[in-house]
Length: 306
Image 1 (cartoon, rainbow, N blue to C red):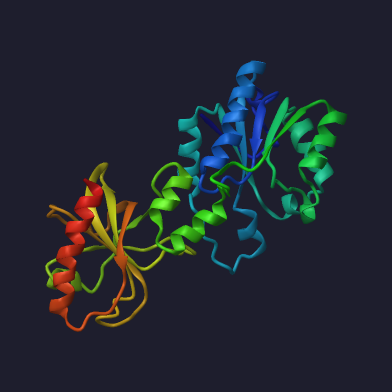
Image 2 (spheres, rainbow, N blue to C red):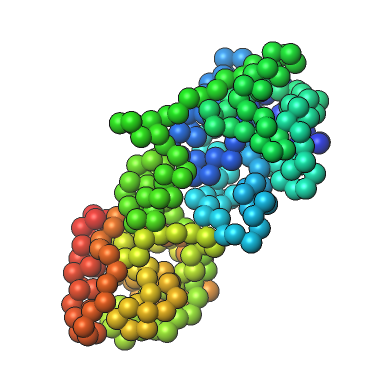
């Protein structure tokens, strides 16, 4: 899959394409319906298939001081697109000039003049242009007048609940990683560099690797069964996110205990995949009671990962 930076110098092989447009944070099951429709339409039209996303996310541009909970960083999002079989991905820099672009200019200049699109696929909640004045309806009108097709995908739902990035974030905030995985179509994961900590886990018999959570991420506090990948090797692990109320009730930190592992992880990049929820965070009367519970937590994590 080719990654294209912006639209002003679009390569020839990406012109005349079927294009899915959106932010696609999470690339969840609803997003995949939009993208798969683009791939199928491209196959029928014998045209290239692509996706257009915006970076940074428009919410980050308009609210720079407000941390945004992104389900998928850019590199992970692009990997997901590639595995789906797209020919290219256009990453449009969302800057001041693009933010001022009228919705008519977006279709006239970007879609028609720069990209010469053949067909567009968007979700029902796609809005674009300055002030979000562009909608699926205005896009359909533009297509009729300028010669490109438009398909609008209605909400993709299961048992009455539509798949959405907002719903997935709410599930993660409750610690419902299994529910989030169901909506995503895969387990949710984060990545970060292992940093030094208080080494309290080592004293309790459970040495942990501390991994900073991505800025803006909201995950329910507690114990999780996870898979941790370091240096291309996956390990079963138990992870704790919380304020350590038994000790200092401090800043939340993700502490990962790799099962049956002995080695130095400091400074290495670790990817943590959340598989199941073990229990809520709570305060214990003593370190001894906490250790006894940790034995049970690790046993339960092993069961969930088996």
